[in-house]
Amino acid sequence: MAQSLVEQTARRILDMVEKERRFLPGDKLPNENDLSRALGVSRTTLREAIRILAARRVLKIERGRGTFVAQPGQKETAIDLNALANLRPDLASLYELRLMVEPRVAYFAARRATAEEVQRILRLGREEEELIARRLDRTQAERAFHQAIARAAHNALTERLMPIIYEAIDSGVQLSRAHEAAVEHTLRDHRMIMDFIAGRDAPGAEAAMRLHILHAMEDFGIQTEGL
Image (cartoon, rainbow, N blue to C red):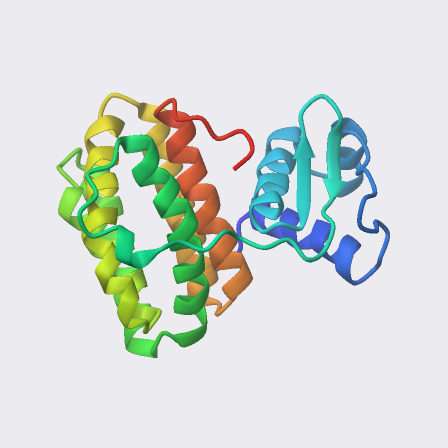
């Protein structure tokens, strides 16, 4: 699959940071108008590209200050799998759990999926797109898509988390029926996830999944600042 303009822009900025070393850790990126003009893209495209790289921990967005190259060595918080079994969490907690788990699952899926598993992920993604286009219930399709990614990660413990994650997925599908923007985000984000997995780009798949979950949280009014 061809990369979207957002993905191409994210890759260009990443090259500026990692290959060309134009910007070092702690450096502030040029303002939005100047950088979008330099890259030849719209500000909307630039914002989405920056969000991908922020989700990937390459950049750090600071409200009121701008966008900076992140410092190296940041770590994600581990979770206690044994404490999850009997929880009945609220929607915000469910989505925070997704944010902790699913981006890394997508990372390993991109690395470990067999050719057949990649094709299954792509097929399920396309089937969900068809359901959305026909305005039919996509709850099971959404589950199947994320389950296929989880299985492609080839980690036995992931299966223990999926029933809890399904609660968030099911709730998200129900809520999105009243949020047109949420449906559009799902379509765009799923395509991005599919592209990265098909391209075996593990960091890209991780960042795309993180962005997908953050979009859903924002669409449903769940606090995301600092996540």
